[in-house]
Image (cartoon, rainbow, N blue to C red; front, side, top):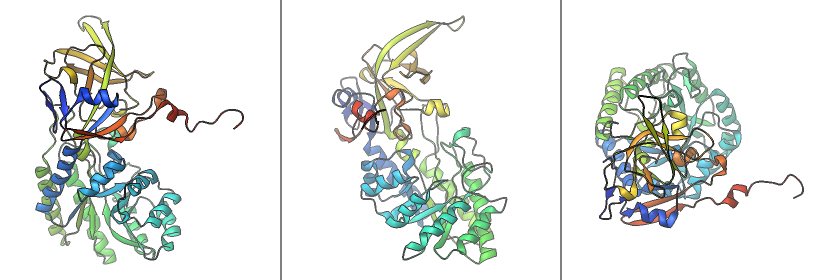
Length: 440
């Protein structure tokens, strides 16, 4: 059986997460329900810090808020000693509402608005990652308004193909993110930052893609960025003091997935960095990492209630397709439609039984809306609780109100206790921003 984190099958034969019976969670909070294993999140935060600090003490881990963010998550990240990177005014506002120190925030985004940049400057974010020449012009309008120059990193495109799904590749030459190294645009941008009195150039940033199962692409990106760092030194006399290599480490969505351990990943990254620095006679920079999925992904489980069961006779030799419909789907998890994502599942209230039933898990939306193309689960019945594994990253973040479904609640579970951290939307919430055609 594919169990993650603190999950286990309890004496009732039910799936248990963080000491909480999934059936009891559904009885209290309803479905669909995002369940976050708090102990696993904290363990992952500490494991990242330990793996890299042991090998490269001059390091800082920054959680990528885009993977999953709410006020409680921001507070947890702060308690674990990580910094936080945000990619919009909304993520920035959430972090501030959580009491996260602005100086420990990093603002990302390929098309930051003037208003977002002004807000970041006003609250005093620690770093802004510059993504374009247009953004430099906008920053020059608002950065002079503060008492000291704004620290910035430049995001660069290292021209590396990470061999992941085409919609989550971000470091190749043909990308909307950052300035191209090979064309010379990145070096030109560094020089422009240096020549802007309201900005301080602190270093370089790259992110090559998501859900990567080894460090090969990271190592290639480090080589490309260090070549640029050497150019910066040679042509400007400045040292790249900070080097951010992004995130992107994959997780286990199915038993067949095999991402590297954090220790192996850290060893590969640090060895490549140290070798590259030595070859170019560069001093050690502050190494920055931005894990998101690998912090929160496996800590998330989504619980659904099984509804209709439908058998469809297929042409020989395919036999029969067994459709199992649930009370959610692409509005709470669009990743199968966007990225062909594959998940594992089990019937939470029958977890002790053998998984002998081959099913296609279907959502309830007015689309094909297949959550899982094919999976082996326990024999299902209407009213059963389906648990889908590894849904911590990008599920809540990408949730929508398609077909006007309210977005699910989020609960953190730990040591047998469950804490509601995001309430379920109501039907009234869905129309709270609507205005009538006539009148007020």
